[in-house]
Length: 328
Image 1 (cartoon, helix red, strand yellow):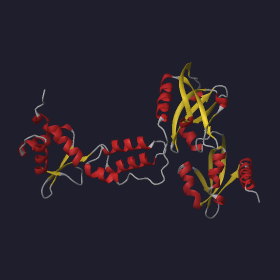
Image 2 (image 1 turned 120 degrees about the vertical axis):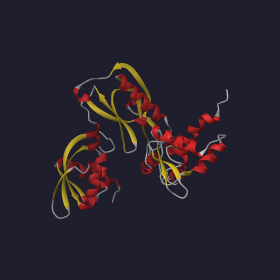
Image 3 (image 1 turned 135 degrees about the vertical axis):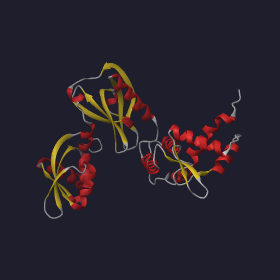
Image 4 (image 1 turned 90 degrees about the vertical axis):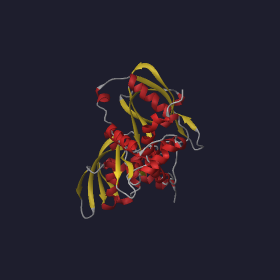
């Protein structure tokens, strides 16, 4: 049965304001009437005034701008334009998303903007040097893991790494890992799964995009006080690349040139004290790992491990091994 298009007038007006107007650019009464007429809807100015008041009563922030001529526009939206810019930039720069998924999400974000704003967002879509994930299986893995956590069940999976030929090599002899999933963590462009391994009575971390053939088992998840009080933020603050290792309370000598990177890594509240002109002592708990040493190496002599001496010695051996690999 055909719908009387006059009854759709208010809906067309609302969509018109949502898609074509914002705080910078509105529609005149003449433009509104012309657009409605193009949809086969006849209207008068007095009727449109009443419709605009109805939309305002409904909760839409429709403003009247005293311009020449007067314009009507939807000013306040769920997201301000600068927030949409942040969302687009975050989506486009994420290595976790495939190109297809990234493009789809950007299109969804653009639908939250006016036509004028969408044109501006289009100019933000190119991110140079972006490395994207090659497949979307990780999304299904995340769903399966979330389901296991909700059901309080253990999961099983195989885990792989890449060899020099860029071929997948199954770890653990290809046998399935059976773990209690604790929490998913998104860090440095990747999803990681923190699990509790009952055999080793400790936590371990796996990159989700390197987990394969994930299954939810019938075995109930392990329960204990350590799992109940697990703090993902504390783990992220200590770990580098979510690489598990032994936590070490370290004292770092940091030059002023490197302090910005230290704050980026540990936060502005990291404990520090002056240590001579242009230097500071920074006190932080870190996870001892090759990733930590690699992170330190980028600063050269601008960041040095002062304590503990054992950690400094291991770092020195790490650097010596790199130098030795190049020969004389």
